[in-house]
Image (cartoon, rainbow, N blue to C red; front, side, top):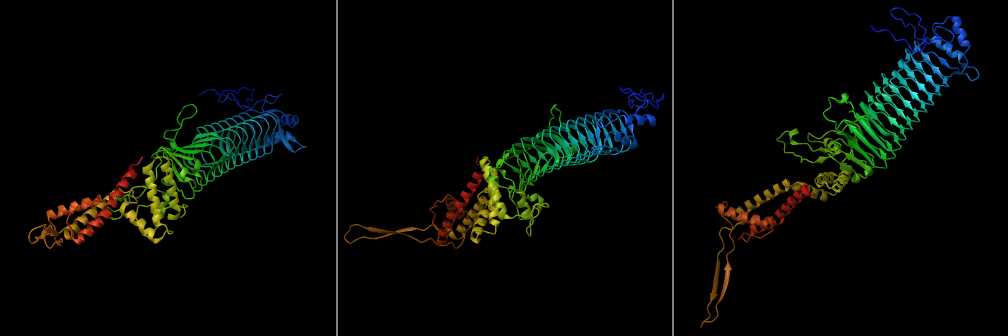
Length: 606
């Protein structure tokens, strides 16, 4: 067993024994050999009477009871102002057995509470720290309340342990350091003001952390901070955030209503980030992992980027950020939940999953920039339904809101996703302009195949909209059925093949003449000789009566049909019905061929 190390100051040593040769570690009261806790009543009273408001005190290592602390504060009570005033106050390694009541106390010099143990509640409400406030390594076993406290100089809570922390409406006039601090219970900083830099580097929040309506006027440092629950920064003000993170939050980070006054880089590993009505007054970059982010009604006038970070974040010292809370997650992908109400003119999305994103209500979507592998939802595949079902959906990029609309229709086909709570109800009238704007964004990005998918979605919404005339709806339905709006070559080729087969069948049955009509020449020889005039005539083609479906007739019908596809006449002898069949074929089949060529062009266009 190691020998206890005595403190660096002359200590009381009361209760020293072979098992504990150091004894009481409390510093000796000047002029005495014992600490304040072990002085006789007469000596203690004599010492306390000698103190005046604002006096310098030194009670390092001393154990305070409620009664002893009250007696010390009574000696420092200024009767003229009614305020308890400490000068330089040294309570390092002290122990407060009961509640530590420092309500409305003024520390005119430095306040040293390093490695102090507060076994009960520590009450510092409305306290004023005019000098440095040192709580490094302090342990708060009860609630620590600094509500409306004012720290005019440095405030250091480095490696402090809080079972419950309340800094509501506190004002930190100097640098505030909470590096390595541990908050066992919820940490409350609502309406707090940090006038200079605040650091929560390596801090651990075991429960939720509340910074609602807090004001950060200087730099912030949450590097390597860990939030095991949620972090609430709603309505907070970041006048110059700089680099915010990287940090890990196992719950959600709420930035709704927050305001960023300067350029900011946010690096979060979190399950959910909420930026509802967040305001950005300068450029910003939000780099995320494992996150679903809600950006509804966010306001920004400068370029803003939301990007998925493929690799773990690195700290300033080059170490990888630990992501133990996300060890079971399948991938570090980033999902965007909503862009409703956003002006997307300056928004850049990089490698973001947009399959759940709600777009209706956003403006300037045609100026949205999509970089990297931004993915959308797709139409249901046949694998998700019974394979004998005649209903099939062509694979294409589909907005989440179209999924919700189709899933809510009577007789909806299985496979369309039902809308989540709060998604609202939108229909083709609202979705058509969204598809149109995103098509323009893809076209400006030279992504023609992607633009084709959104053109298909736009036409689908137009076809189902309630504000178009019936004749236009029929025209769009025919365009969709024949070629998928000029985007589905297989559909056009299938119709072309069917039309050719029908044409061949009709020609063999009714269009090819029974026999090739023969030509005859007739003339009259004038008496006495002279010029003979011949009249050449040809028999009318005769309708077939038997043996209509022969190889010879098939060959002739195929020749007529193939020539019709390329809008040429075959020169075959046809019946009257065959002539009309050929005319219909020459009109429809080249159109179908053209639609197939157009569809192929739209899918491979650069």
